[in-house]
Length: 86
Image (cartoon, rainbow, N blue to C red):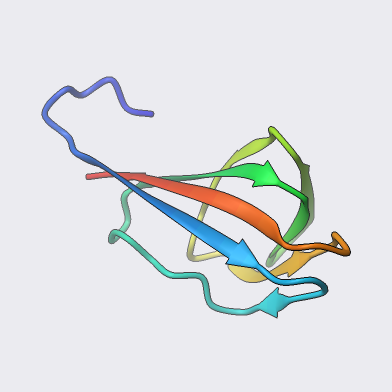
């Protein structure tokens, strides 16, 4: 995340049920740095121009303006930790 020590970081754990698809993921900030860390399971992030699959332990910098859908590829629930600095 940003090395600016004056910024705050908010964390939120999101659970996606088996075979769940979401076109809206809770947004913690506005145009801030936002990361998704996959704690458990396997998830696909669908952006306008590509798809990115994350497995347990993977992390991605989110571009909300391009994010279209998130899909749980795991037969059990998947857990995502969202981190936003602002």
